[in-house]
Length: 200
Ligand code: PCA
Image (cartoon, rainbow, N blue to C red; front, side):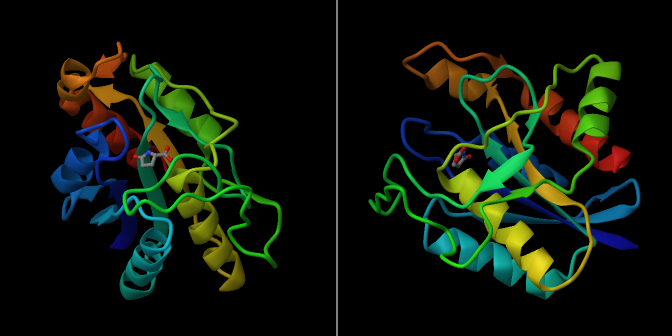
């Protein structure tokens, strides 16, 4: 059976819960469509998260990679179109703050997702789940992880589907948040991720 590496992130900044953690924990070890799921949680740390995802990639030799991140404030599931060679923005969980910093000095400016993002969005919408393609993964940890894994896959000469998908807040997170956040149930978030894996 083929393997799919599914990653999520720990809580960060003003978000005391990261719903991607629950999705990854729930789906780890399960079989979805053609894939057995290897779930891994990543730290919100510019130095450590690339190390962790590359370790998992080399350990599991997956046939597909989907990384998940929270986009607090978005109301749809949003597969990302592109990762850019830039780190900038808020401090990470270890306090590191980067400004206009390339992820890889020698790397290309960007990488397009190799996930079938249009198909994923259409599959969710057919199932009554709001989804749209996002044209920016930002310049924080999610973009960093997406760029890192696509760069590694390219360098290794493999051609596998890989990319990043931002998900909205869960109800539990929205209930704890000081600002108003659109939210989904954990079970709908899980269901959406399953449907996308089935569509691969
Ligand atoms: N979302 C952040 C980092 C961790 C996460 O879940 C981002 O969009 O970069």
